[in-house]
Length: 174
Image 1 (cartoon, rainbow, N blue to C red):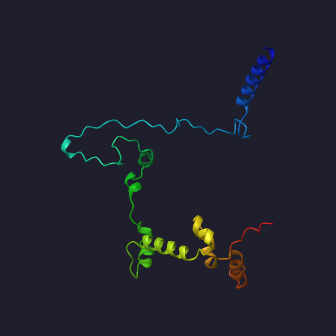
Image 2 (spheres, rainbow, N blue to C red):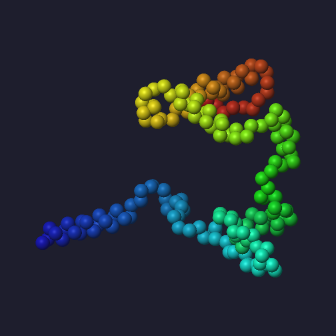
Image 3 (cartoon, one colour):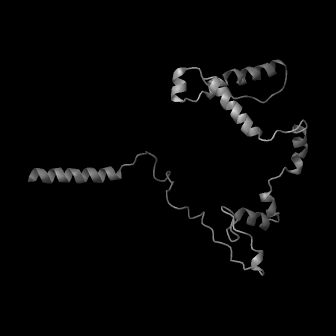
């Protein structure tokens, strides 16, 4: 009977002590991450507006914004005297129009991103020659493009030898 009590006491003490331990050794003051809600991210909704003509209401769009949802960035821009509609603009800014015109002077290909992604995948498939890499589907991105990689140090030295002024580079790691 006495042995059972001692074993139970040891189990309770071990349980209490294991509850006091932490997986990471970061002091509690430095570990301010929380899995709970962020109380600073909660913003009140705008007041509900009833339009004069209910037929003028836009059709609901899945994933679209609600008219009473908070828009803190747009509200801040408006409070500072800016135009909040400019936050939603997705076109090319006037300052970049010359750059876009120069880049597109020979025409543009529709779907270029998908074409390049397909060509890149084909290039990497052709350049993974090892059997285990194929069987295990290992990414060989860096090895496939190693011949096209730029040696930054050699390029920096080449420009310095030519007498071109350039920014200082950080020292090589020891």
